[in-house]
Length: 258
Image (cartoon, rainbow, N blue to C red):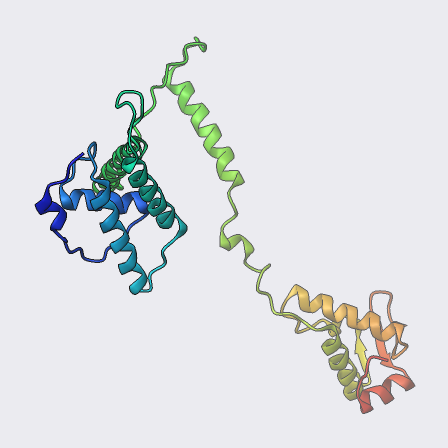
């Protein structure tokens, strides 16, 4: 294989680029020198490849082992080509394996470029075509429109019953004012301290809600359990509440729950 003398003396200059691997770098050199990929001048290619590695080192770029392994492989091919051959037909060209690698890498790189372009053009534009749905003819009964309507309304009614109730349904349940039983105990003691006696029914007068009625009732039970008040039956329909001696003292000093 001969190399044109003028081409051998040329020293093309390249801008420093980012290569994905040694094969990418070799293809760039082949394209730049317009070299036939099936008839590669190994000497010229090896010289420019080593110059490119030196440029990468001077730029403090990471020269990986793959680039160095390819340099060693190119040197090996060059040395094999310098050895004398006994038969041109029997021996394989040392460049053949490199050519196969470059051709295959170039083909995959072109495929990647085509797919990337398709992704750029067709991204978010293509939709999956609808699936063909075969009609199900296993159900052979026929129904009138009124029957279908009634069935639809029945299903719709069940669906509505499963829905959450409207906010108005919670009126008076959620958001009520919390009534403290302890507060009603203190309030009841103070009323008894002022009036000395109270009818049981009048204790609940002024209650504005059911929660307040329950709290007053629990306060009465609590005071009775602690023996702060006593009950006296009146006419069989009502009771009279009075402070005990201990209850009057507690009411004057302040109820502590003991």
